[in-house]
Image (tube, rainbow, N blue to C red; front, side, top):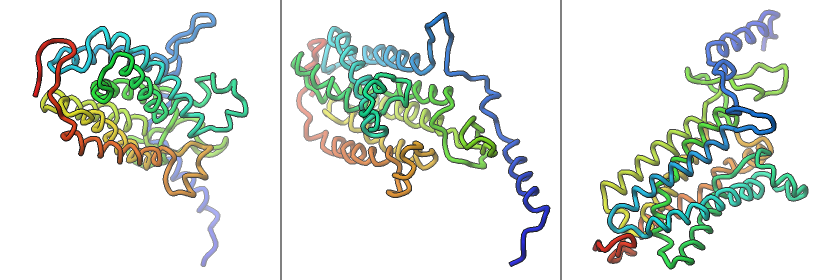
Length: 304
């Protein structure tokens, strides 16, 4: 084998630099994690994403409840927001600590610093489900049908949340040479050339937000899926699981779990999606067996 010539290394570096130079730099987009700051108060896009997702989801839920066969009334929806919000925050944060950063249990005060690491969607799902079950038991409602209606409104929050991840310049994807690759800041050790990466946050916003919403919208408004308990929430869980599992192939694993991903062959997010995919498929497949005559909580109309 011939030795490397003197000009070979500079040529390689110049080729990489030229390729990187043809991509969009994140810093040129003018995005910042903060919306504005007034004194000690700072409003972040991530916080606004949660607020916007909850409010828009609540508005859409009221639209769904106005249709025949609703499992709860408007007064229930108003109370439900509290249970769902509490489940999202507590479940999401505890899920992140358990699944991604268990070392935080050694420093409990870090758990309350929501900006330190972030939230886990899978933990949020568990927390929200527990909150909805408690809510349904309190009001003597069918908890599975309540889940069906809530599932239709969740993609709003997922869409805004992934856009906030992009604005924050976090959870970026793997290096790529595709034309739409973006050069994020501080993704490699200082002194190394920053590679263009997949904007995996936008992939997730499209799949988990737009596409999943469209699927559930069609199932609710164009079919009779809402009369088969578990079908809508099953579609949501199955759809999210497949979308997240797929996007993880284009996304960098969390730095503290890189060794785990290399050892198991899959990211932690993908492993957590496996039971979602199986459970969602089961709910969809068995939903027709649970269909009974539906009495509307909000009115007098029955639907067979």
